[in-house]
Length: 280
Image 1: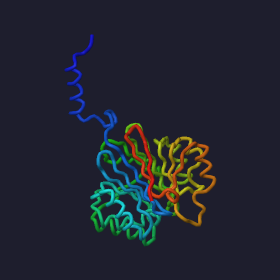
Image 2: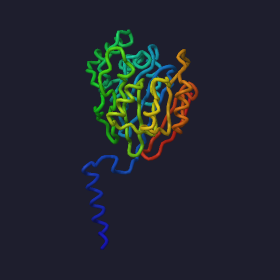
Image 3: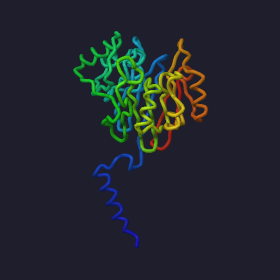
């Protein structure tokens, strides 16, 4: 016997009223992930489907104004979550200017320090805004609507000198689409995340350490299974991205996008479909 239409409509109204998770309801708003071209450095801006603005890293020292201008062009008026993946100057160098230019609600970073001016400037900017840095480590979830965003690394203490493996690694799930942002995480961190059975599978991978051969190891890529790989890189003396890494992504059948070749790289997710656009 078929249920009367009014009963079905009543059930739908109840689902809406009691706020079931967005993943159980058809996705309507897009999520946009901007890999900003900052040369040899990292800066990623995410417009979440719930409307929140998230910034992961801020390029090198002296690039803060550039990042601020990019964000303002995207009509960002405040930042709900700012993440410093680790203390390297090519990742947090511009974050002090971002903190001065926008109201920032929460700052996350791993519990490892550095002695550089860039790191000190970042800490002073956080203090000036009367904010307290929240710990970015495996298991910590971000309070965002319509997505599941959780740090999957670092999974342990890597000592005072191994800054890259301290990188905060963030996994974001929007309905059926998944993104993984790895900072400069290298083999030790990648192996630890795999052993800890963290959620790593991703349609889009922000490639670790600008395509250095010490990151994006084969065993890690077998678990992540990326369809798209983004390398944030500029002119450098390190040979990034290395041929080894590019070959690993070729074997993994992932399409590689490089900021030094494509400029700004923007992925748009509807929750079920991902499209990409580039601009200089």
